[in-house]
Image (cartoon, rainbow over all chains, first blue to last red; front, side, top):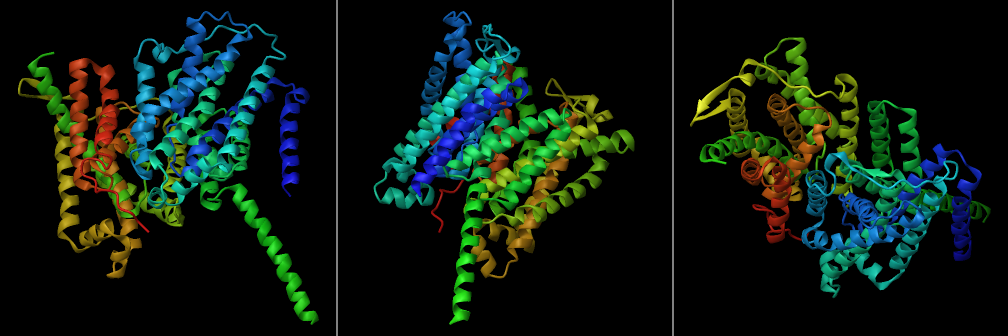
Length: 330
Length: 294
């Protein structure tokens, strides 16, 4: 059984690797890049919020810090605009981790419900700072040195960089899930007081998880900045990002490994498609909001759990049927 | 910076803060009774403002008279949303799910408002919006005073209802402990629905004042909800008095910072105060120490 599972992971990875080689239309490969960025961010977000139950609605803080790190560093270190800037992506992730420590020190002191709200508040501190301070360029935003590649394969390097982030985030999330540390996070989700009573250093565990989850989100933000070539505070510190990441993970299955990947894959590609399909923002909001409502109301545990239950139910029915048949026969 | 400007900003802060306190009281009431964080409160405020706008522009109804229509309308909207979506939420992740559901509701409403009113900024107008009165050497628009008076009247009404009526006792019992409230024969479900309706209804009044003192569009709801959330967390989630005190203090401090250090810092100070207070007192100013449930 575990071997079959590994095969599926490889098939999925193979499909993602092949996608830009088969599909060369830049409209679709662009959707591909965004979808992968979201898949990586959602997986990383889930590694803390999904496992520990502390829903972080301020993950755009890490995303924005990554994006600004990329932009400011490539400007101040005089990157000429060749491919070298890709090396700044992990630096963006590190910057996000550094920011995550003080943020976590404040936000993680409170219990779950308040944590949600305080992460929103901290998010606004960052967004407003980005708008107010001068080194961020304010609302006018900042430009990155343009990368002079041919337009036909322009998306490919970004696509594979995003895929690398997804693979990294997935492997990390998998490793955490199997580790003692991951069990401690899950114990906090199930009953924080009892976990503390049993000797889990809850605050340290939460802070470590929170900081670790910042890394891939920061890298996602850095890649996003590099991909677009310009950033604005309201788009990198975006409340929609906060909520989308959470929604993707919940839609897929909060706290599961495949959930955020599937959730981001379905929702982000759909969101991008809807944005193209409904150029009027109002229709887009109505359609997206309604879908969102339906998902949360009818599949509150996520598609992975839903499909799993459906499969075990149908299996149980089969077994039950077999038993009835056996009973009748006797 | 001078004495008059400081005094002016304090008066301003108290007057507008009371309106924020009113909207935040609705939000904290909903959280306290139902354990639901209603992030749609921001868009409900804007919905209320747009309703007042439509009534005054198309039918020529005065803003305050229009409240007789907009408050009941939003009460009904609240009840419909609660019945249709929120009663379905169960289980341990209920609070988080409530945030997502109400966020989805607010996205849909935002889309509809953009469709009907476009995303251009509008403002509410009336004679008392554009005229001022001289108080302590500074000029105050009448609308600030009227808004303050209205907030005081509505908050008083709310408090009388909560502390002097039988229904109020049921609400307070549900605030304290839902299970025990149900055990002594309170219909917690009905109380919850009515509380949600009431919590939303106050946004009609708040929205009208907001629309008369700020240019707004549907996206203004993000700014509003973030402030309202900060206020209720700072006051202590579920604490009615906390929302009142925090609302007035926060807006006053924000106005003061704006005068002393410049408007660039006023928004930021709002969120920074929360961060500082919560690092010292994680349960908020008037919140109860979190107790273990189940």
